[in-house]
Length: 278
Length: 143
Image (cartoon, rainbow over all chains, first blue to last red; front, side, top):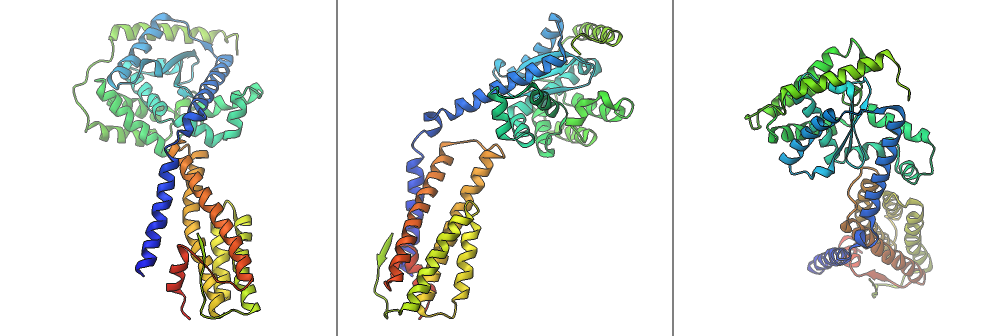
């Protein structure tokens, strides 16, 4: 009995010892696996962004870009994220939507800026999307919905533009897992609180979105990839109780009104004349 | 990994064939069951219960195969779960994962070779007790 026990211990020790010994070799670094994965993600991000560009015109307004960039910087600085880890692109589109792409890229439609009543609400949506980026949810969703082989084909450039369009559709309108959403909300509450912005604004945004979706459901694309908004808003309010309560305005009200005016004018112009790229 | 031991009696031709078959069956199961490790264990369990009323030599070798397959299944299942996680669920690809897969592969190769060797030797009527699983089999199978 004693001998058998010693044999078993010996077996486990040999197994763990071999595992640990082989683990001393840096396979990931040697075969540059990490670099390959990052390069693939970067290529995918660029290809998908190009597909978004084909269907939407990039919004050209220095003041809107600067205002949104300031919100991002405030969130990044307070949460110790490198400023370069997230790049925001604003596109002319009246859909209320924002979505993250691979490689830390974040797309915001002007329809979303127009729909937000306060800059803090926009900050909440950006914080939520930043959480998806930080949690690597986009690649997880793409792997689940599209499959690794198709993603590698797309990243390799050997596919038609049709796949790129399909991937944009998946990213912008397919729901994340319930768990991923919940985790992103938790992180968004933390990011906002650390930046001194009240997370209640994100809850308000979600409540309003769920209440008004029945009027013009087609425009509320953000709801299709972020379902259960009402429940999530309630959970955000519960999470908020544990956070810092010294909140302030994210940016000046005057600046917000100015950019809202610019966006609103652009959207009205777009509604009157269908835009050339479409 | 493998050592020849004296057995209390000399097995006859029929017993040697049966004992050898238990090793061969686990080999076939490895080939057909891979990468689902459960098949190997199921094959070993079926063969063991099929020979439960067999002679001591046959029962002993069936049990050694069964123990080896049970431990292999545990280790292989962890490897398969981890690999699926990396490929499908986006687990991070780490040096720890690669070294675990290599370790499991090495142990599987050693077990594969030991199984072929044992199948040949038991067919000749020789008793083969594996270093780790043999003493455990001694405890579990009584004459």
